[in-house]
Length: 234
Image (tube, rainbow, N blue to C red; front, top):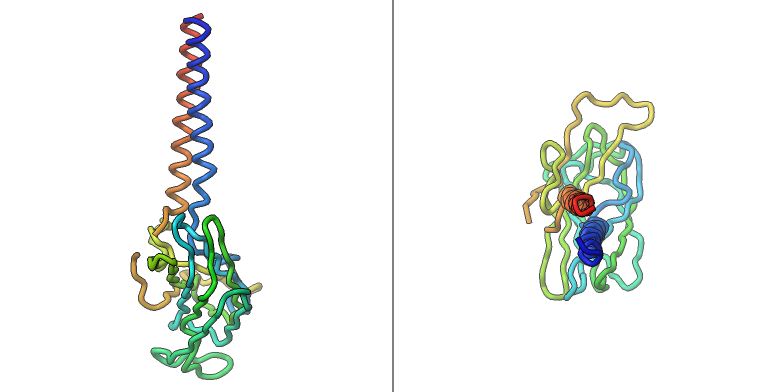
């Protein structure tokens, strides 16, 4: 094998590895609406941010609507102003009254909507909310979210967590609840729902990781083939 052919073989292998690494690093950018931090202590108060990335190259995010659970309602909800955005907090009657340490709760926050602002291409925005008390005896709260784009497209991040831990196609933001300090964990915690949950949106983190690993494997195979080719030629 000539020097030129050897160089071409090595270059091809290097290109394959570079492409695989680039794809693997780029995949995590394909995010979805999430709650940050993703965990909080049951029975207490917490502050979270709903992180909303813009996933369209040809449109901006102009509205975000978060639905709050009514089977495990939150008695206290307040929002932090976001410059350029208008926020509307809606309270509604609960399907059935809930007894809390503060008395019987018949109404609670059902939705929080941010609108009027813009999240551009390659950008994200965080919408902060303070809430509590968080329920005990459940292991999570689910917050189905609707993301509206300037093109008129509406993406519904409303799929509940799948059994077995697999991530659904359009996962709803989830706040995982951990037992309060000093509390005895429940043997079989009940998962909290958040009202009607419908399927509706971006590659899951699990899928992204799988694709990234596959890309790396293909790149590594290219290097092995190139090395074997050079050995045969020597």
